[in-house]
Image 1 (cartoon, one colour):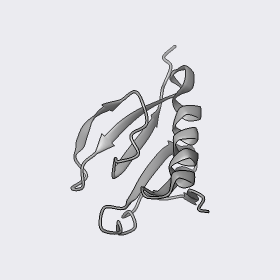
Image 2 (tube, rainbow, N blue to C red; image 1 turned 90 degrees about the horizontal axis):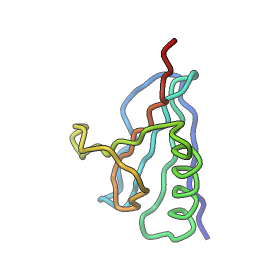
Image 3 (cartoon, rainbow, N blue to C red; image 1 turned 180 degrees about the horizontal axis):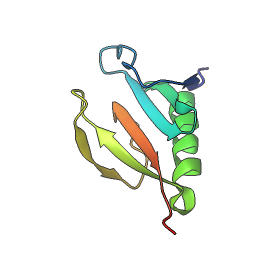
Image 4 (tube, rainbow, N blue to C red; image 1 turned 180 degrees about the vertical axis):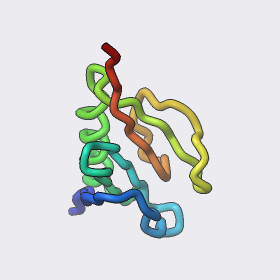
Length: 97
């Protein structure tokens, strides 16, 4: 039984090598740099944990999610979790004053 792996990183850097397309990575941009959640696409438990993190962060518009392709180019805005995504970037919503 697997668990999605969450790591904290204070600087943006290269993402870990993806295991032959079987691993997804979600990065939450925050005040400490970014927090990563990594999941094995073949593990229902890891997918469920990553989905729960996505839904918690995007609930009520707190974060906006973007899919990234394998080359790091933006692939579009996401409104629901896709366990097949290789990379997801979560950007906090900013409020003007």
